[in-house]
Length: 442
Image (cartoon, helix red, strand yellow):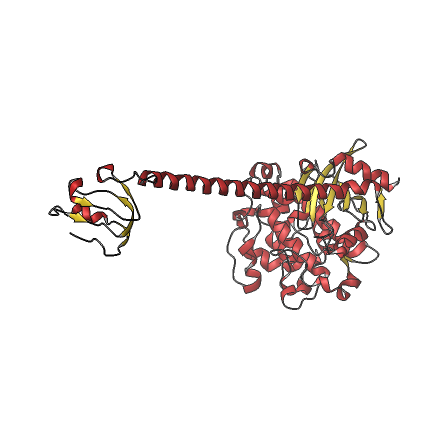
């Protein structure tokens, strides 16, 4: 094969080494370059003279190649290593920047509370016990180490609750969300307005509050056992809540609501009665708490925030259609809570018969909380009365529901209609549906 003097350029094809019938190869006087791997021919029969830059096997009079294939592979590996190192450095730099930003944000959050020690502005409100508010404010910051998470005992939609030991006494401090996130001032002022003007043994006691330019919090009695909901959700704790204790808790809540609706100078509607807002002390006494949604009845219709107040599963059905809020909405929510106390869980589908008027042949004993022992013979009457009261409060028509004053009277008198006074295992839910309207006359 004679390719001489053809102005060929580029590298010599390696396929030439596979031409086993080749006897002579002449590639001289061209512009070929690159690496020549050789052929099966003797060097005397291969002519590569007068080309630009061919390197390769010394047998052919060529200069060895500096960049062999192995060198190329090594160079590729070195390039990949440099790329990986660059990516790791970039990722490390990103992590460092993220940690720096997080540290600055945490520092600023801490600094808000530190500023509260020395800085206040006109309009800040301090009302804690009967001594200097600023001193009490600093005591609370010291007791909670500027609201460190290790003192947090609960959290909700509006803020977190901290345990604070101040001057030998233990309190619950509800720290509202930061000023940037917490915009509903009405909730904060409503709770202060209600709790500073109400005094009842079954309503959680407000010791003081702080509305500062940097933070807001409320100071309450600490309820050692937490909320009713948390106890009912824990099997071991629920077993401690026997039937007499459950009856007593229902009566406590009923008395608190009756006081709010009928005994205050201006009737107050809580608007968010649920098991999470009923707290229990060491002796399982019930207290109504969280008055952030509470409103005086005369202000209900002038407030645009009243329409959607409440918690799903506890809200009265008329709110979804008429949007008319009355004290009977609290009565309905109370009925749901009573059923939750009796059943040990939210009644759920058991509320449907009130809407569709279907017959209920289920026995009362079958819906009772099975985690505790069956009620004794002297306790059966109280259980029947509780469910009868609950059914009366769960009536779809608000006017058909009893008032909380009538509920308190029924629970205090502990008298049931003679028609349903029979052994607990014989009472059906339909019996209670049929006679729940008699609660208003007990």
